[in-house]
Length: 487
Image (cartoon, rainbow, N blue to C red):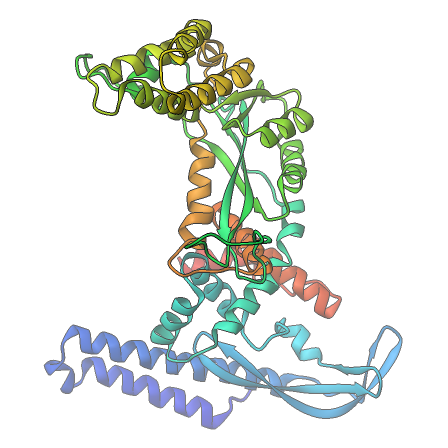
């Protein structure tokens, strides 16, 4: 096997220059910062040459046939064709044999052997760039990319790469393996909530006939976020909850119990509405059902649509109204009746919470009925709203039983999901999203936050190869071995 002399010699010269740079006389007057910077750019240039050498060698080793048969169709050889390959190190050129037939197109066997992606950007570039865009705006991502690697690409290209990747998320969901769940995590929990995403004017929900002063031309579109996870029981008392929500400075400090953490948490978001979100949740739950699941819990904030869909799709789950949401209603009525600075406000809240938590809701409702007749009409509206909320949801507020069983009674997981999945990425200053772009970002970001990113990318590469070449992915070296070697 003979190397390409010019490329190989350039690489050897470059390596010698790098060694001289870090060990020669001039290096004695350099700072660590200077040497590290020069090494970074030198290694990128060296990697580009090495990659070009790899492709050049594969080009020379390729067997030239007179024709190439695909699905019983004979494609004659017409010569070598070039294509760009944009790698982490920069752009290189790939020359490969082309077998072409009029009205049928061309075939490139070396492309298949190397599993070259359809786009000129390498799979490494696609994966790493997509990771950046999941945590920062597209424009910032490509700017940082340029500063790190010394070559630029357009914001539009990065958006299109994500769109390509997003097309594989649903297929990946169908084959994803659930994480191993410890036996003690015997409670299967589902939760759902809504979160608005600021849309472009074109994709905004229809505006009112006349906008009010200061009302934006664009609006938010509701996304439905779901979460499912397993968790171990965590028995508590009413006092534990009251002390956590309305701390009493006179209470003695007691050691806090170790709170179990959710296991195999899976987030999902969609702009297709609550029904689409619950259809997906049904699929997820069906794959989680196994012998160690002994309790099933559904948490919502009291939204009528969400409650209805839980009861429709998950009638065997215990539906629980989030205690934090209940507490927000109680704070609202406490401030209405007493004022935000009243000395007895916290005491009133603790008493109200105890009524809720100890299955004594009638006593609280009787108190609110009594107060309703003694406040102004403006305050009556608040009291009436809180009374209606408590009465409408009381059948899902048996907290005494929930706490004894160790069930979760707060929607912290889904609230955190709305923040991490949506707010942290979609609501940065000035952002507006198209419906397609928002859904792609929801899909990819959920996959990333679920801890499935590397598995998903492996799946995407294999499926894209299968689609492009109608053959299995040529895994010469299993990727898990490559990762262990790299570590």
